[in-house]
Image (cartoon, rainbow, N blue to C red):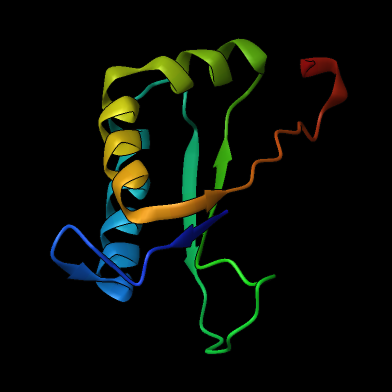
Length: 101
């Protein structure tokens, strides 16, 4: 989950959220180890410190695939954009099938 800057890279927060969604959801076609990527953009307009602006749910089959995805050059290009437009990041990595750990 990320909190976005009000404006960055010449775009509004909403525009950057849409760009993040497009970039992240395009990664499974480029990275074999990434099974899927779904991005949600917050729809609640409120000044609340607990609300994040963008969330990513990414699916990898196991820790090895997750590590490969994390360092993949196409993912790293997206990371560079995200670093420019966000102020905070929160991460939870988990596997539905505990045998994948």
